[in-house]
Length: 113
Length: 111
Image (cartoon, rainbow over all chains, first blue to last red; front, top):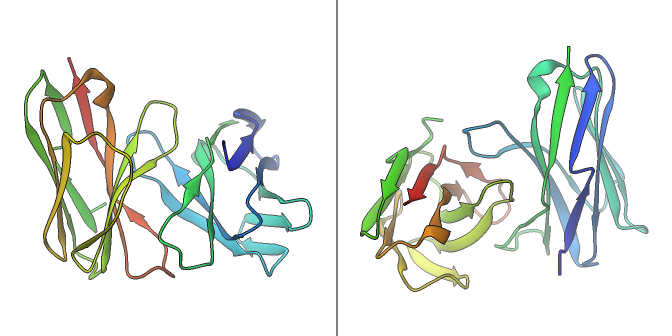
């Protein structure tokens, strides 16, 4: 059973547009949601994260919107740049501090100049 | 990523034994081995916290982790199988409330 789902599997947007990556989850106990960015040939790197007590988290051009009732969240990348082209993983863990983190399948984002 | 170094970077093997190495220079207490197959998310294999094996996910017994000290992590693989072809990432974090730092990975190809 896939506990963290991401959509779309791949996404292409033009430079300057806002890219929207979606994530949903099934486990109500999940309370911490990091997003990881992975470039080809590299390991995942933390991009931005949110706790379930918040409904929004901003960091520069990156914003997470979180809907606890619907168990959905999304990552918005404003003014997207070709350098943002990467695979983005939504992840989740329960009881913030739990050792295990569950990754979604990822969204491959391509920004066209 | 010089904060976590992994070696070798690339590895091509037949049915042989090999060890992957990882060292973190961050003073973190927890270290992890993740396996990432093509077009898949990372999957947790092993976790060490303060040199103690805390969680051992369901992985084949031919994979044996070792943590000689708090900054180093090894993954011994015996008689590799083609399904083992993947990228193996080492990761660490200071504690359970901190975020992961991943290494650049070892790309294993079994032929």
